[in-house]
Length: 259
Image (cartoon, rainbow, N blue to C red):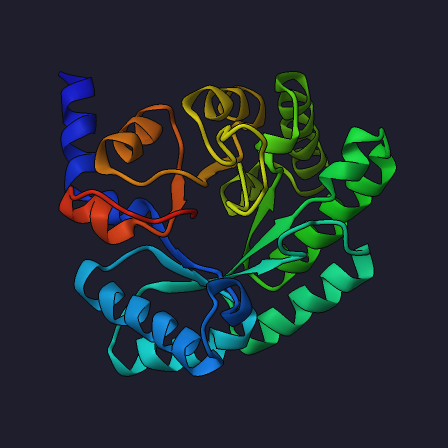
């Protein structure tokens, strides 16, 4: 009975798990800047209909999005990305990006962790990045998410980096910070070979959940339909980043190529 009640609750409220996402630049989309901003505007209009938890956009559109949502009395939050999408920017560059995003009014900041340095064993750099980025966000009452880019990591590395982030957060900020810090699977922009998944899979999300809880968990990259989203929730994922939010809410099929 408890499981059935859980499923019913999530079916009714799945929009509140969704970070509706549009992160392409005009160049990546192959369109003009005006057309790209219109894509952001379209997402915001859609948000008024489906009441997503958050819209995830590039920092340059934060002011535009905040004003639009305020004028329309929407409670949807605004998030942006830091160090996107390669993650190999210096710590200072990431902190500067984050400070600017906070000044613009972002509610949540999704940092791409320097996963390549993690793979090389540069653990001290990763510790400092997580420590300083989390500190900045928590001091400003913002949610912080750490994107680990699962497609670039082995199963063991996914476990290790998830556990490392958890340990840094709990040791430095305490259990009360766990509800404000996420481990997130992917950027959705990582190039894989042989058409392998470049984002969240059930297997990778299980590993993150097992090693990062009690931190929050976000599945991003490749979640394009209602059934996949619901299964992610049953795996104890707390948020889903997707460019297919409308399709998930309406149970239709998405043609989106990435998250």
